[in-house]
Amino acid sequence: QSVQAADTLAHVVGDEVEAVLIANGGALPGDDSPLLHRLLRARKDASPGVAMISVADPSGRVLAFSHAHPAQGADGGPIDVSKAAFFKALRDDPVRSLSIGTPLRNHVDGGWRFHVARPLRGAGGQLAGVVFVGLDVDAFARVYSGLAISGKSFRVFHEAGAMMFRWPPATDDQVGEDYSKSASLQVFRSGAPSAVFERGQRGRNDASARELRIVAPVA
Image 1 (cartoon, rainbow, N blue to C red):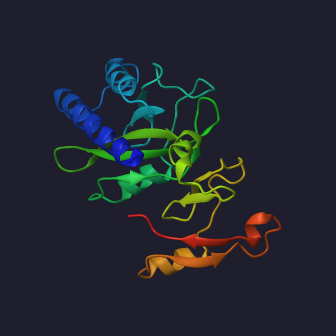
Image 2: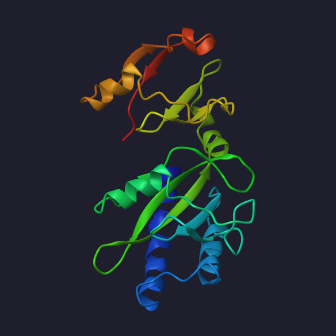
């Protein structure tokens, strides 16, 4: 539900930014304009549970975000999301309307965050920018902590295989860990059953190597 809420928010903000796009002759305002920041800040303040909202141009440069103006990284320089999975998915697929990214370090406090993104399209269908909503991994995991069974844990994975979050909370080295070669993920990609059982990863020395897991896909 939190992802659906973030998607709805990205859709609403996208419509508002596209109105700005049209009024601005088909181009987004530059990163020196406070217009987008004010719009994003108002939506962020009305959306509990959302860490941030940002707009990037077609090259991946962040033009505005909700928590400060101008949009700058911790070093005071520009923020580039062109290599982020959520951005590349929308840039490379002209018919895709939604992308959920893998966890990334945020540019403010170094915490883990993932993003729900929607494209901004020009009159000819070309990519004019991307609106993306950030959700903090730990906060998102707490929302689902009620699903945990005493003494057990649960994890949620990205379709690409990266671990998104877990409960109890993941350590820094666990967030984003690559499970793309997991036997279960391969089964689901090939036309999945509703659930499979698996043992922990071979070659690991921690407790997860001895776990028996129930793994199921999420639509």
